[in-house]
Image 1 (tube, rainbow, N blue to C red):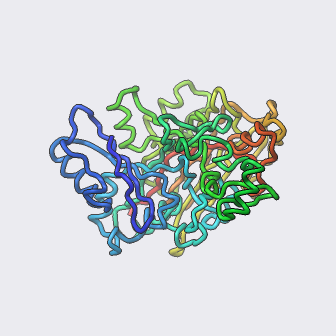
Image 2 (cartoon, rainbow, N blue to C red):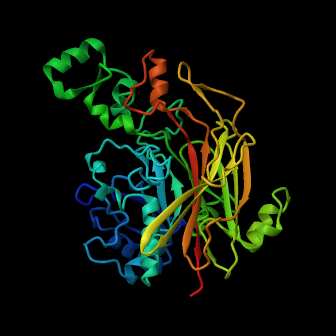
Length: 451
């Protein structure tokens, strides 16, 4: 694996990891930022070594601080995306990282105003996030919509990618647990005081505030290190999930290629996602359900050609982390174009605790899960260990291209910063969420009409 180190475009993060299929067949020289900060040059290099039998793919890091250029309608030099660009990106970048320590890039409340869960770990502490022009082109759902727009204009869709999560830790191991989050960058955030989750030493904090006021910020009448105002927004995230035939590098690489991947924000949630016209002949209790789903339907990462006048069936099957928090709800997010405008909608498709989806709002009732903020304990009698459901889009149109992906939410738990505060006998900061809902995201399935 090589790392396209520090690839910035006007201070906009465009890092990528390059994964090689076979470690026995590697190039003599690795492409780095010293060669070029332009991702298109990286793809050209990957094509060149591929012609010599060296197979690889690139995975962009979490794109939420890309300043809008990660998923632009323009190429690196500002010209419009053309067919050559689209094909080159599609070949070399089948996956994108949706979550990691520096946050989550599924979507943003300013982009998805009707998604009540869009604010999950999106604050970064970076000034550019305050400008919506930096948000468009930095988030995955927006990219999927842009891809439909480009495809409608006759281009190959360059944003038809699957999803993974990663840690991006700089300390030699993942810090993806809320309860035991310990660091991303070692000496800079190795204690709760340095992370900004508890007040800085009362005596020295007051002294520094007088002597060097820019080093201290005041929240709730308490002093916190100003240097921690970026670190407090780091996330305990994430993990990559892959559905592969076997646990080998070759099989996992092929699963990457076909985008049969999913991401979690840290817990070991498992999710399967299929769509097709044969699932309606199956039962959720069939022992051969997954075998039949593979035989006659499309798994996550694939494209289903719309059968005229026939609404396909989706299957979502989610399993909670065996050592983690129960699941609260399963959702399917849909995106499409209508009258030239981007459209998206969140559908709850399965509810925990025997609750039913409201057919008008497409939402589950609250399952009354709670968190005790005195010790971060949760109630053990709500939520599910497994959720499995068939679903048909109640607003399906057979002349409309669209994408669908699944999002699975756990019951709420304490955020890592709340755990820090409780251990120190401090009250959690009021400007940081005290609880979060960990989650998993499947790669999409695209529905495409016959032209």
